Image (cartoon, rainbow, N blue to C red; front, side, top):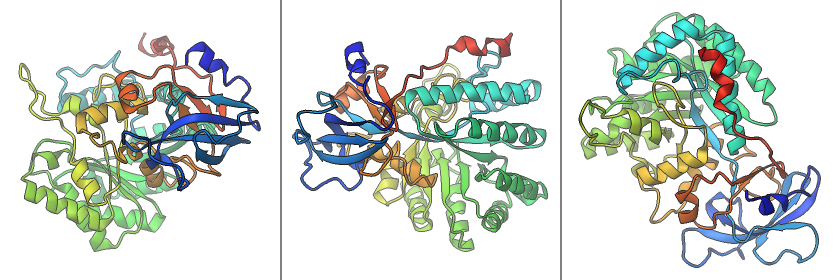
Length: 444
């Protein structure tokens, strides 16, 4: 924030009572807004409110201008206030290896090979821990309240990365809520290795996952996965059809497997890129099935824009993202997330969910109207991660908020918002994004 605005929070501390006055909020991010809080003229689902903060929680949400004129408070001059976001799909174990392992051609296959080489050569506990810590520092400084990360879990790497993750989760408790997902190939669930992975995930309180694509015994592998998850009370998280091949239809098979097995846990499907390349009738039939099965979907717009439809000397013809509008129309919970950061799958990124939402809005046309699309950043991912106190602004909820100088969507999405103020339990956060030089020792 500019210095005068930042200084206005100087009196806020844990246990303090104060008002955030003349705040602009998307009503879709407010839990049970009072009926007298009206959408601001001009639409876009924005409203002006005053927020009462007491003892680290939101004590009240009232119409803007009705808070007492005297007493401690900060006047936000119609600045936007959002709940701290939840980053539902990341790869903290892969992050920030670009300096020593670039993607040679920018393709998906190039990324797979580059990561495999780097993992075999460098992914010790010390290396993974340092890069994971760097990524979490970025997330925390940007205001993220919770992160789900996939962990490469084949062979010896599982015994390295899961304990490192467990230590990070304990170290970051109270700052970022962490979940981990096992990342293996779907065919692994046709082998005895699947039991070892499922037991490992259960010991660490994780989520059972895999990369799903078209294999000969796909249905048998899915049935085994859901059986292992059900036996251990685990939720499930897939990488699904991350390709432009219209014949990639594992999402269809996943939905049928959920219905066939009666699986009751939460099922998240990431990517689902091939839907955009399929004939509309076939793609929409799959979405009807996904809605019936209760699937949730997360799209990773920056990474897939980077990887999909890349060919030397040729401009890409499609965006690599999935059918989010059609999903939402069917009641499928949809979210956006960071995915990879500064590794061979995506050479950029900073674990910043504000950037993710900004780019998702541009890439996926999450505007005109903006409607409830902001829910893709916090309430929906919080629901998937089973975090009942995260993702919304409401009376009784923890005051984990991001305060922007921007007053409208146009102002919010036109700049990086590097002057934001993050409040955690009502207290201004002083954390800064880490310097890249912190990683130099790993790449010497």
